[in-house]
Image (tube, rainbow, N blue to C red; front, side):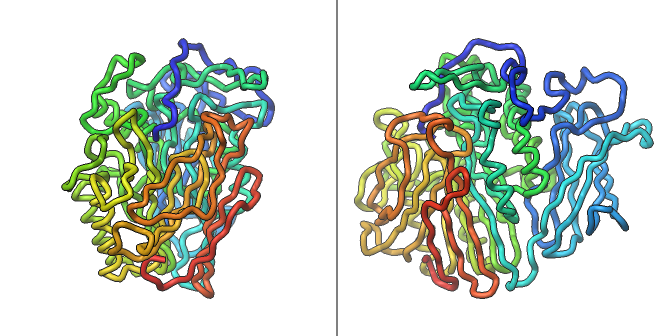
Length: 524
């Protein structure tokens, strides 16, 4: 996104902020040491566990060891682990930064799965560390079971990192207590281009203190620095506890690499010695795949971020990648733009999979908004819209093609979710208000950030006829999480009626806006 790539900070040592932190933040015991430096003892999984891309019968379990180890997963119906099933996972080592993923399959649908991960010495399987436990629900196979999930994004942005004085990433605890089936992170899981300083002085004179690490003292350029940026967030106790109880569906956006990046770009940023965005993005994608359990990034998954996660007959989640295949940012006035923001192949995939889907609801997880005008410098634009309210131009041509397909192929139950802009809003698009009219009405909901600076509202582009019945945004740029609430969205799908309810919530859980959508409609 466009809001602030952050200034450069001098290189720090390690965890200065953590040394003065509160007891509420239980940092991994080996946070300060690379795994290769570990000596003696048994393998340890101090970075917690995660589960990702859960379906009716499968899921991916993630762990990070402090040294080479064999990953072993046990699953059971109860916490006692009676009649546990054992899954022999990979040997983790330096090639994946000591992270590993084990694929579970043949799981019962709609059930609570208890699991624990053991790390064993590769040369002596009897030498295992303390097991790390978690739980998750598989997706229901019937249409009668309710579904709840949350979405948001933008974590540790603009230099606002883990603040021990505030209790760290508190919003994850707010979401965990609401017991969602899964969490959709809509991008900017890290800010590779935003170093984390030890302290920041707020406008009112208060001091914001951060937990810091060596890797986050500068912009990420090397693979080790990208790995360190993803690892940084796992220092937060709230996030690790959340990960152990709530599965994730994760996508990426620009700040996984650099503000507003696109393929083929050469960075104009003096903080970087490596200025080739393609080189940086390849390193980031490797680390991204190491630190999140994502099926399509597994060795047999195609090596891509975009995918569809089937969550039973009520819900399919279409995860887009608006970053890896886009054309260069420009004024966006082209009358022909086949590459657009998705690339031709991803667009074909999306149209095909939407038409094939039999789910009642098709949630399209978009890492950028469709109608908000996001500038990139004085003349170029970063997202789909470019401020011209007339007929589709530039990247809008690709969106028009997709919306036309949804209408004419009678694809029902589409809802768009996004983050990116660091505020929360509800946006409805309708042909009677639009310059382009060959589509059915639909909703787009915006929620975030999780822990980053808040920014003022952006303008809407009139090409697809948006209106904004709700918005909450700061009136100045880069408002810290200590001064402005952070936001997450909540989706409830009723198993009886099929109704989908969207609630936009702020930190603490307060509902700011809600909307009930009816099933079985083309558009919405």
